[in-house]
Image 1 (spheres, one colour):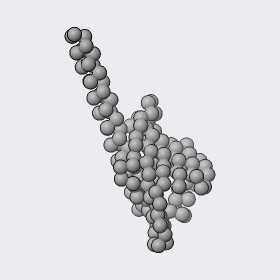
Image 2 (cartoon, helix red, strand yellow):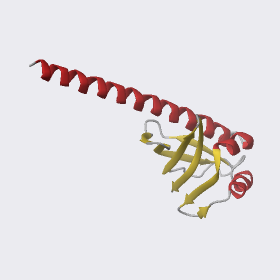
Image 3 (cartoon, helix red, strand yellow):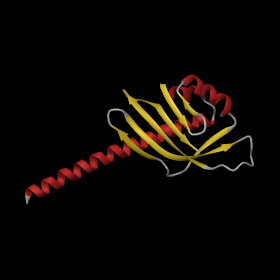
Length: 146
């Protein structure tokens, strides 16, 4: 009987430990998403650039693959700044750990066309792969689906 209780205590401890780790990771990714997209919405290019890995791969269902950090930043300056803002769909983010690497973030967001006020925004899905290297988080892969 003591063995059953001991096993139950070990299982409960492990569950609570991993749940706390997952909750902490979720909060970290939510914060990173918020900071990055605040920079996106306010054209803070320097902050955006700090988030992108030098080996970024950005897969866009309309524009294809971009694997140049410089081209991605230039495209943001040319096509996004002052023209588009992103709004996160509340409650849509899911976060899963990637052991010994970082995390994957799944979610939905809405882009507003600030130049065409009568345009109807629609929800789209995204995937962001976050790398945690020595406590520094960076975006290494993005999949954007409209």
